[in-house]
Length: 255
Image 1 (cartoon, rainbow, N blue to C red):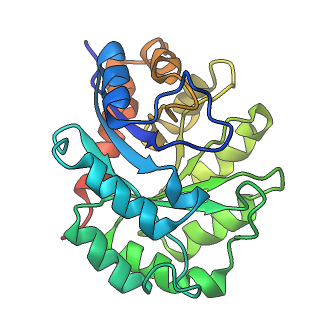
Image 2 (image 1 turned 90 degrees about the horizontal axis):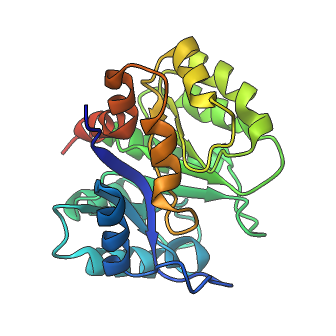
Image 3 (image 1 turned 30 degrees about the vertical axis):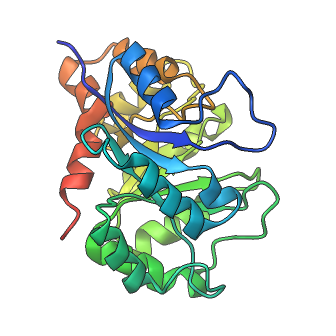
C-alpha cells in the first residue's frame, strides 16, 4: 500500500540566523514535496510569530494564491488585547473567508513573554471551538506545559488541539495520560526522537491522535516520513497518521 502524505507543519519565509540551505519560498517547498512524494501541506509564514501576525498571515495568503490544490494556509493567532488581531469571532470569520482551516498558537517562544492565560484566550479558543478549527500549539520552553494543555483540552472539549515540536524524548511518557484522557488532544510527529515511540503509542492508544508533519524547512521532509512509513503497524494505521487523521479534522471544520 502506497502511503499518501499530508504535511500538517511546513513553513515559508526566512527567520533569524537562517541556514541558506533551507528553502524559504513556495517553489522550494513544492520541490521538496515532489522530491519526497508529499501530496499536500499546510503552511505557515515565518513572519507571523517572529514579527507581525497580521502581515505574516496576509503575506502567506498572497504567496499561496494559485497553489490551493496542494498548499493550504495556517494562520497564526493570539488574543485580541494588543490590537494585532481582531476579537476571536471576527478573526474566525476572516479565516473562513480566506479558506483557513488550521490555527497556530505560539507560547513562550524565543524569549517572548506571550504565555497561555486562560482569561485572555477564552474568547479566541471559544470561537475556534465553535468553528471546529484545529489549533496547533507550539511551546518553545523547557518548563512543563502539561497542565496548560490539559486545561485547554478539558475546557474546550470540541476543539482539536495539536501539540507540535514535542520532540524531546523525555516528554514521551507525559503524552500518554493526555492522549488517554482527552480525545481532542493530538501530537504532531515532526522530529520525534523516541525509539519506535510512535509504534508504542499506537499499541497503547491507537493511531487516531497522531498527526504527520515535517516542520520543513527546520527538518527535512523525509525525516518524519520514513519513521511513519517504516512503522511495524498495519497499513491502515500508517495511512491514518500520514494523512487520514488530518483530513478528518479539516473535514469537521464548519462553514
